[in-house]
Length: 339
Figure (cartoon, rainbow, N blue to C red):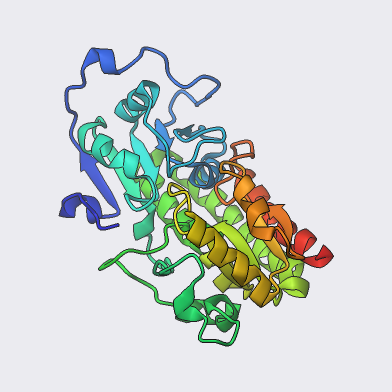
């Protein structure tokens, strides 16, 4: 998705002036259950994985607000009036960018009272991968039953295409802990600039988070190593970054985009591919229709599992990112080991 905003929003952090917001569009209640220190800046985050990273860096200072909470998905989310109030009050707003949270594009042009807005898909050092061209990843098959995942072991991660600002890229950036580290660095820089009084706390928390992400990366490598050569199918193509980091074999997806329900031809195509490749597992996602997975595996030896790339089933907080990544690795290991 190309950016619809002007050049100003392409910068990682920008200042936005206050605009008049109709009173009826904004309720008087803020998010419930959110606690902040009296001197903490009001910080708003878009999705759970980003909220988790920001929460970890803000520990001891305050707690960020979260827009896409519960089992909601950024792919299908509609902004609520309470979200508009939170955005208006925010001093700092973190989101991935318009390629993922399209619902935030227009509100971020109209809302915010002198807010710093950080689009984390602009974080320095971030690895970006282009969208693949079909649910079965046809351009990468080449008749040898392998796709780009098997062709890109983790040590080639740093040599992947590092920037695709001139075109569309896969926005599930957080599914590589090294990308999470790059985003955490940008989060820290943004918070320090907005709230220099708490700079030392942010920087200390960021160092601790950086070390935990390195340890998580090592842990996941060991978890998936025994099953990384077994091909499997996912509900939608959200796992490229996990694939490239850990060298696993995602053979295709049932649908390219979760907003689009695949037709009978696509489902039949994936069903054939499961049989041809001997794909051992087909993974559903908690927010979307599991019945399609049952259709795909019918008459094959493949098993079904569940992956949760956007943390729909997890409780928001600083530990969520680690629970999310371990959950994906565990689901893969368990299903592929038993298949």
